[in-house]
Length: 235
Image 1 (tube, rainbow, N blue to C red):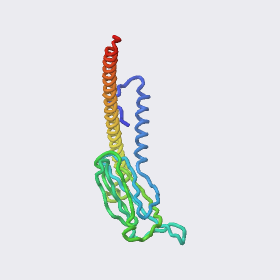
Image 2 (image 1 turned 180 degrees about the vertical axis):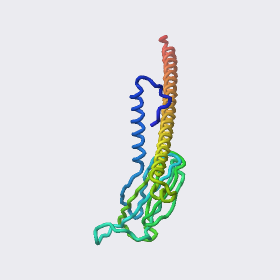
Image 3 (image 1 turned 45 degrees about the horizontal axis):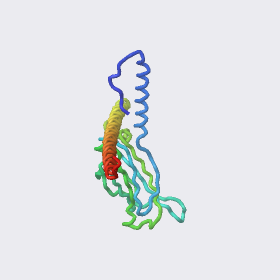
Image 4 (image 1 turned 90 degrees about the vertical axis):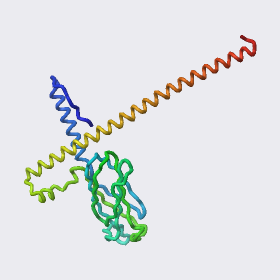
């Protein structure tokens, strides 16, 4: 959602200002909703992938932990460290950003360099160790995007920031994240506009081609009928 620029002040200024505030607030809510926790089940050789729309130059942090179903206790239990997870991340151009083996629980981090849909895939290394022999694995995954990935308590302790300084830093990073989101939305709009223009151009040329084909067929039919009538001496 692009922010309007160069708005001329008029009598309707309060309504226009309110509209801009509402749009900015909705965009802030969108940024605040980025990332989140989820839980899914994974088979022994199964690979689960997730799509995350990420602006460029944005840090992403994923935390996960795994549980293995215990048939005797009929509940999920923490697994041994030997059972690991392989994490693979690809950018919108299908370029590999991250490919690494982790333990039964861990944390992975990457930074996007291209805006768009990033593919995050996870699968276990159970075929290597044969630790759960066809059982079901439960994976808890929490993905944080942008400034939500920052641990501000750790930052405050490391940089010795006061509460006011820490809050100001949070606000600055939130504004930067909103700017990245706006740039990403503009990029989306530009791609949509290019696709629309390309489609309209193709439709136009297809219509012209259809018209030329119909004209050619009509001319051919008229010449064919004329030849037919002349052969039958009707003309």
